[in-house]
Length: 262
Image (tube, rainbow, N blue to C red):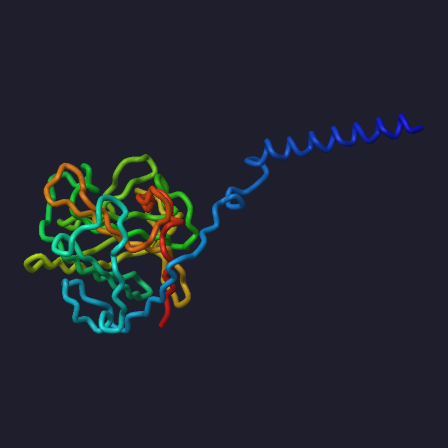
């Protein structure tokens, strides 16, 4: 009787083990991908006030919306050494309407450098503003997908990011910009149409309608090159822990969080 009982227990354990192995090996067949996506830990949470009057894209800071918005610094070193003040200083403001997100940027840069006429060639090594948008603040990988966007806006206004085929694409329809430069100060204004992870290149896509309470992943940075073959500094708006800080173009977890309010 004892022997029979032990044999029963043994085979029960074998069956349970096989069941666990089967479930592990067939996760892709029986479980939604969303169940295993990384959940972003929100950080640098900032409130963004709605614009009662839509800012004009004229490179002018006098719009009423900018008067009530808060300046935030772009003071985090992501690549290179901390630049001296005469070489670089950056700050930004944000506002919104249901149709778009608006960003005002003031950059002090003593040398504006654009070495490539082709906007799709080594675009990150030219002077440019880079704006990171995650429409649902979900975080996670977006290197070769549209889970989030890393818009590189060049001095000539061209907007570049990588597409799902791992090739650069112009996203000029996503971001409109105006830059006004006087001496070593450039004022940039951006109108950003928000698209979520369902966006597909070459198809008709619906933009996200922004509302009070909407959370977006957001970061902004500046690639600074004073005449070298490669960018010399990359200064961002969000602290990224660890040795490797150039992560925004891959991982939306490092984006801050903005909350739209009225």
